[in-house]
Structure formats: structure tokens, C-alpha cells
Image (cartoon, rainbow, N blue to C red; front, side, top):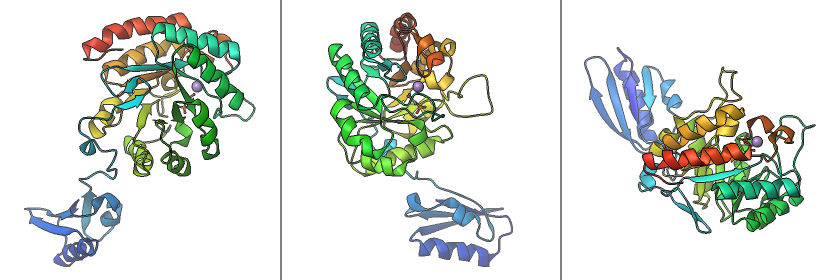
Length: 337
Ligand code: PEP
Ligand code: MN
């Protein structure tokens, strides 16, 4: 931790800061420059809030050097985490494509979806059985019946199942049907849910909250890791900004940022990231070029009649075309699909 004193800070102010640091079990290294005195602290900085020092008399600024997350930090596993699910590896050389409708709507829809995405080269089918909808009047998902349909459709096509868990009470049910439990953007900071997911031994796909910083995303992952579940993958899905021309602003730069800061696999969801079908393919291409370990893409056999997120769902033939393009882009960045 570094504390920079203001120009003209008095000796008494400097000493008060040193005393506070020592009290917190930092060993303090003082450096007196021409203008500022700088105090370097070696100690338990992961737990401190720099603002607590910035409000002390005579302090200009305070910075942590170590990050607040430890287990999610790349230093913890410099080679990167590879999550194995069945015979699929997430975080390895292959960019994994998970695709399917926003929601499971009926047996025929999910069976057709699974056949189409498998044919095009996806490794997993996605689809919500519990849906977090902005309006309570919108379709809320089929619940367990939806999970059953999803599992059957996946098994018939050799796919993994990714589906969203909205509440800790749903975990036992999800475990029966799902290979990867998705935590949606709205639940990224539902700490009780994260703590329960730390106890299971199935991978968790943690989506970035709509107004969450990368550090907050990594701290949420830290909840799951610190409770003992090391199989966490992250996902950029667009954040809320002042821009209104897309549903969210897809933060492609979060991909290399997370890859630098953390060893966890980083996926991208260009569907929620843009909200519009015509923007999904370009952003999917960009995400893979930027180093994403996988994509979560909404694909629907008849998107104009989808019960949720039809506008951002690709038609099956568009998804197949995207996969063809990714087969060119991925090798250019040292990956396969
Ligand atoms: C979804 O993947 O269907 C979903 C609801 O995503 P998000 O949590 O990113 O909005
Ligand atoms: Mn959706």
C-alpha cells in the first residue's frame, strides 16, 4: 500500500498516518521527496479500504498495490485455469461456443435449437428455465419442466447444459439437470447465492453485473473460490452506460483486462451485450479476436416469435455463418473453435 502525503503535510500528520499503519500491522517505509512524503506499507492490504487513509489529515492519496482478490488473481495460477466438464475444456486452446435460446419455451423449440447449434459446432446448449425478467408480467420460464427438456435436448445432441440459477433454493434441482450453473448479471452481487455456489462441485458461469467494475466481478468470483469451488468462468455481457443505441455497451476491453488480472476463463455474451441481432455477429468476432475463451450466444429457431430476447437472438443460419467466420478468426489468434 502506498500513502502519498500532501505538499506541506506536517510532521505530526505524517506520524499520525505512520502510527495508524503500524496499528494495522503494516511495516512502514518512509521516503521523503522534494515535494511529497510517500509512505510504503507492507502488510494486510487486501483487507483495507484506501479511502480510510485518504480521509486522514494531510493525506493526498492512498493506493493498494495488491488486489483485494487473492484466489482470482492471476498470480495465484499464472498458467490459467482450465475447467473440465465431460470431455470439454473451458480455458484451454479451444474457444468454447455455448448457444441456444434465451428461454426454454417448449420441447420442440429446445430440441430444434439443440440440433441446430450442435450441427454448427457449439459444445453446449444454453437456455433459461428460471428467467430474471424486468417485468413480472413477462414469461418467467418453465422451471423444472424446462430443465428436463433442456437435458433431453442436450443429451440427444451430445451437448453440455448451461442454465441460470436465480436463487440458492434452486441449486439442488439445477444440479440434477445442468452441467454449468449460470449466475445472471442481476445476481452477480447476490452474495448469499455466491456462498452457496461455493459449496457445490459443478462449474459456475458468473456474468458481469450491469453496473459492475471488473474488480467487483473478480471479487464476486472470489466469494465462490474462497468457499472451495475453483471452477468459475466469467462473462462480459455488456454494461449500462449513457449510450442508448444498443441495449448495453459491450465492454470488449474487459476481456484482455480480466485475462491479465485473473487466471479464470473469460467468456463473452454478444447477445445481451448488444441487444440487437445485427450487432451480435460483429461483436462475437471481436470478442474472440480479443482473446475470449468462449461465447454465450442466443440462437432461436424462430426468433421473431421468441418468448424472450427474440430481437437479439440469431437465426440458426446466422449462427452457422458466425461459426464459419470464427473458424478463420480463432486460428489467427492462436486458438481453435
Ligand atoms: C441470459 O443469459 O439469458 C440472461 C438473463 O443474461 P444476463 O444475466 O446477462 O442479463
Ligand atoms: Mn436472454
